[in-house]
Amino acid sequence: MVENSKFTNTSIRKGENSDFDKQVENFYHSKEWKRFRILAFEKHGFLCTMCVKYGEERPRLATLIHHIVEVRYDFSKRFDIDNVTPLCEACHNRVHSDIKANHTTAKPKKTYAVIV
Image 1: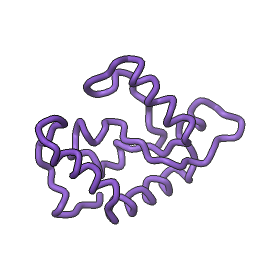
Image 2: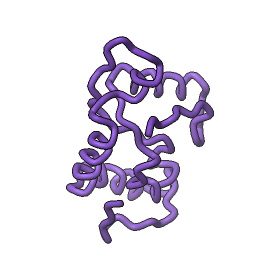
Image 3: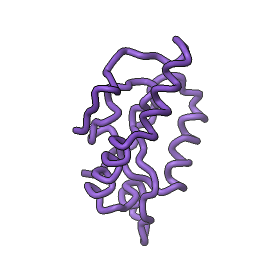
Image 4: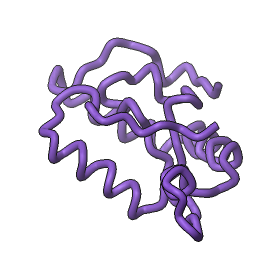
């Protein structure tokens, strides 16, 4: 797990103040996140885990790392390798469409399994 003292495991919740949004934005632009993304891609052979799971004839290369439990809901899981999965853009959009369609305001109701 990658950890850095400037990203603390404080119990921040969206809406408490604008510092939360700044902290999340800073996290996604950090060197630590960029290094962690590479580890997550490597763990899954750079393939989209949903394409693989659902038997796509030609699984697409993953271009994004998706947090299963979003950072804004549990900031402490941002570097949890079991809380991320590589996805192609199409599958990532599908996941977020499903979340939005369910009017999710907390953790997503539909869980997408991580292939390990």
